[in-house]
Every structure is written in C-alpha cells, then in structure tokens.
Image 1 (cartoon, helix red, strand yellow):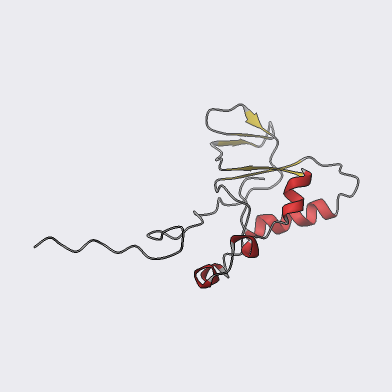
Image 2 (image 1 turned 60 degrees about the vertical axis):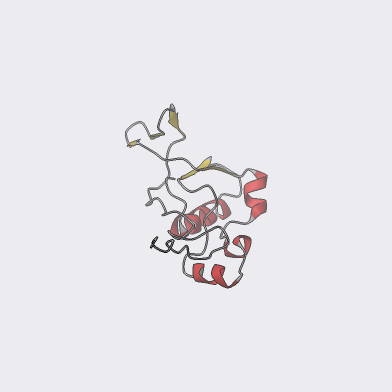
Length: 125
C-alpha cells in the first residue's frame, strides 16, 4: 500500500486482523519517517501529548514484522499490470494492495521540534 495516513492504517489493521493465516505479504510505503498518527488530535501535541500517544500503529505491530513498513520513502510509479510500485532509485517494491494519498509532513511548518512557533528576527535599525 502506498501512503500511511489514518485511513490507510485502518485498512492495514483490518487486513492483518482478517488474515490470521498470514496469506498476504503486507508492505506499506509512506513518505513520512514515522508511522501513521491521529491528525485530528494533532493540535494536542502542542499541549504536551506525546508522539506515541498520537500514533495509530501499535509499536508491537511494527516490531513483530507482520507488516513491512517502509517509512521515509516515496513511490514514483505504480504499475497495476505488473503489481509493482517503483521507488526513486530502487527496483520495484512489493505489489501495492491499495492506493492512498501520501501524508503531509508531521511537524507543522514554522515550528521547532518542541512545537513552538518560530518568529522572524526583528528588522535591523
């Protein structure tokens, strides 16, 4: 699957839950460097909520390896006939299961890692 947003992660959760015999190899390619998170509650990050509290992916799910998450990657081309997704500078990746839009960056523009807004320096007099 290309994209690891909220809807895409729910699809992965349901696919994995319904595939108890592990018939499917599930690969998720997402542009962000971290798993899917709750975008609706993202503003609570500024109030001190942690990244792990916003995460929609159980860390055990990633650690066990049931799903091959490929964070920090993009896809240039999806070939539906060959069932491949080509990453820039790579050979075709695992066949995509479902297409989804790539998520925007985690950190809001103009913010520091602590979540504080950056201010422009005062003009020199």
